[in-house]
Length: 127
Image (cartoon, rainbow, N blue to C red; front, side):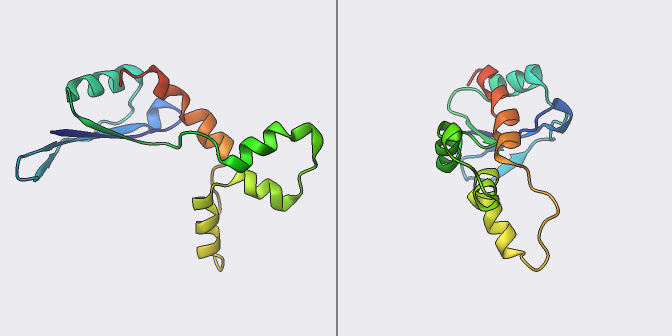
């Protein structure tokens, strides 16, 4: 069995992939990581995995419910700072901010930047 992990970025220079070939005893052989993956390289890597492979993509899919609701109701309500942060950050982001409240991260990507830029290339892959 084969597993392919894809660390998706908005542009190919930041996109990487790594394949693991699993033996019957569940020991894995990690192949050399592939960097700077564009669509053609990702298509090739996915195709080489064969039938029954597991492919994991490190990218968010979909939008948080609060974000969808807010965008749908945008003409009807004003968003305060607290609401904007709820829309801007995913629950995992808010957890990290709260966990490190004494020294918060200097930068977290917004929902739009992550979902809008990262999810789109996946539609072009053959899986």
